[in-house]
Image 1 (tube, rainbow, N blue to C red):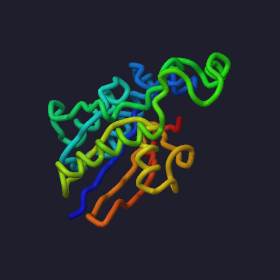
Image 2 (image 1 turned 135 degrees about the vertical axis):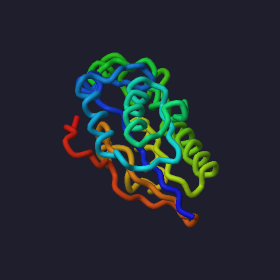
Image 3 (image 1 turned 45 degrees about the vertical axis):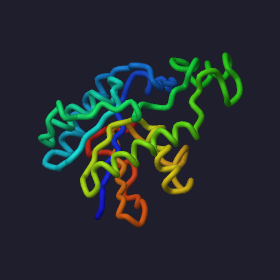
Image 4 (image 1 turned 60 degrees about the vertical axis):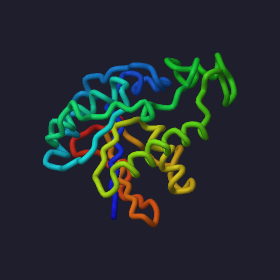
Length: 196
């Protein structure tokens, strides 16, 4: 029995434009992000999701709502799931890369969530949804590095960190058929959605 996952990255925020570490910060969608979310909703209109879950951070949640509306998925059935929250960047959140390098040089700084910890968290969520909703079509609205962490694990590094473009409101399609994970399309931008 095949279970299908559609991993959706949130729409654009001002911090995306400025290339700031967002992590668990509660940044909202900007006007482009809101337009992207509407375009995504138009792209998926008429599709069916049996299950929908979202990071509770505003940029993800406000991307999930129009998707739910377009697919006739009841908003009150969207599962808010802290396991879908973005990688935590600790004291670097809010800073650009250059600012972070000046203030906190090196590859490790206070509060940074290690990649292995993120991978454990993301795959725990994937496994849970797989076991609870076998054979169903599942939408997870989440974040770019979170999606990369899943790809990193299931493709053994063929895809993952720095190897694919997880664009705002892109969709990454994965299936599990009992024999293992299969990767379909990665980071498909809906028609009319500008890349960030």
